[in-house]
Length: 406
Length: 102
Image 1 (cartoon, one colour):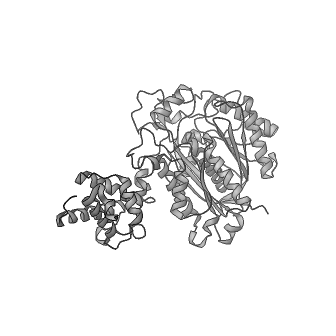
Image 2: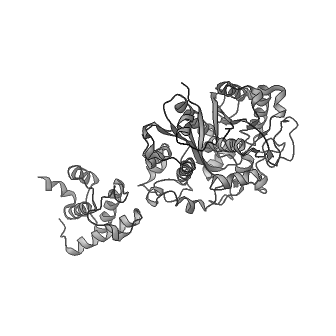
Image 3: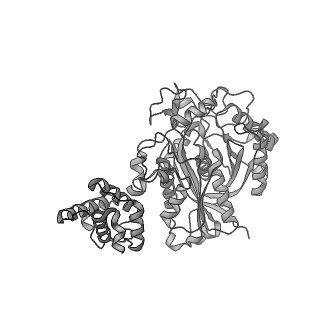
């Protein structure tokens, strides 16, 4: 028997807020979280802007993490644990009334953020701060869970892969609840210099809030973001059994590899198209049922071009009628956290009946002619949506969500 | 072998209580010799190592961690009182701690 997978809890931290509610409000209002970098002196770098999580997060996180544990975590790990605890609260899970052996944790982790700008790293906590499994470990320890607990790294698709793996654990009947997601920050001089060397980042330093402009003709690279997104996946039968609130249905997914290039997507979006087709088939839906696509939409020349071409390949004449938007226009590219953060936004879009916009869309690219929901959110009756994540190295994922009647 | 005085014991006791009150975010008045470090105040084994480092510096101790580790395997510490007793032995005997076993 294949179990239906539903979303019963969500927690999100980004440059637009520390809670799901504040994030959603700002996303719908089309606000940008991109500013001049404040965590360190970036004046010597080509890129001096990022979508940073506000410094107030440290105080906020003290409501969720004890001082002792906090000292053994990086700031990014604290974001992950805080978002996880908010998601568990949102799901109203009583783990004492749950079989902990059937509860898992899967986190998409590119790195733990133990960089040169991380504070208070000592010889005593270096190992704990650096362990890439630490986010999953802290969460499973917090709730004393005994199911699988691990991290997965597929670059910018990491937390989308975490959700995909969580989907499998539930749909195959191996778990009842999986805490899935990811957290990331590469706002540090080394990573910014490295991505600058690849000409991947926007250098629109004078107009930070307008720097991330996916699908626009004047796009000049992505803007680094940071944050965490955690989703509680649960079997439908288990959720109904405890009368849980259901945010939406996770209908299916595809994870594929392009087998092509360490940085660039395959020509004309062939790999992206293949991923979306496979996801649609896995969810058991028709392409014509898709009402919204939350794009990977990085604001780089190649991604936005090829993602547009890929959508056209998959949806044909319907492509121009499907609203597509990029949340990265507002919160930047949150790297390992992007998949789960954007999955949360997709679920919220279906639940609330509002599609968040692509902001900074002022100069249309003549080659990119889809409906990108320019600048202003749109009220909609969307029932099925895709969330795309495409990582360096050709790690692709497309997740399919369906509005739940509740 | 160092000479242990009442003053030393009081100092160690004060440092241990302050350390756990601060790290575990608990009221110092609630800590006593019978307090279970893990079950009662949500402490962890790393705290033991951190305290050893504190005492090594304070009393300029000559002791290797592996010596303490070998001793602790046979004399596990679960309460604050046991931890203070072991710290006193460490200060008193330093690298000769294992000779207490003979």
